Image (cartoon, helix red, strand yellow):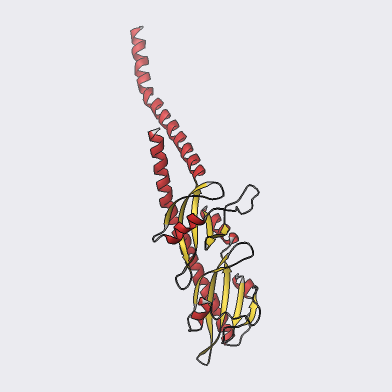
Length: 275
């Protein structure tokens, strides 16, 4: 019993260590995505600044939405968004940076009909005659489809929150639909308040998981959500049990093999005793 408890504790600690590394790898993936979207925004703003056609950016770059703003920060063109012409985005932090002449990208949380939508939003200024004449904003969704692609490559179960509300997840219910996760407030608050990341356990959709999490920040450093990777405790125990069974089987085989020479010696002695 004590050996089993020690094995479980050791497996949990090792799993949390691995998960802590994995969540930082995923955070790095998001950083790379931000750099890519900054380049896309730059490309489009350069086209417009030189009076070229914007082309088909959704098909060409795989973004979900493109918005062009005039010098006052109002929408003059939009594609793939719900924004109306004339809407002001002058207070958007990414837009504010664009109008200072800087191209930047950051995670952005936006209220949705059911769940908050998380996206990478990048902005780049349009410059004419040395002055900022407008800006281009591009959005790339960090949604369940994106998380599923990351899971295919890494095997990680990933959960993303906008604020303390679920935004996207790789977890599925019995019917294959994204799993609804309830009562997450305390768990997400722990991640949001963690200084160097959070390691622990949480109930996600009525199942216990070992979790490693990091807060998500916007362009001005505000914590607007959380991301977490995890492994089901039941799956961990199943894997541990299978590994233990293999170890015990291997040990038994080694014991049998170690006894074979003794059996041979005993057989020879018995033979001589009866001769």
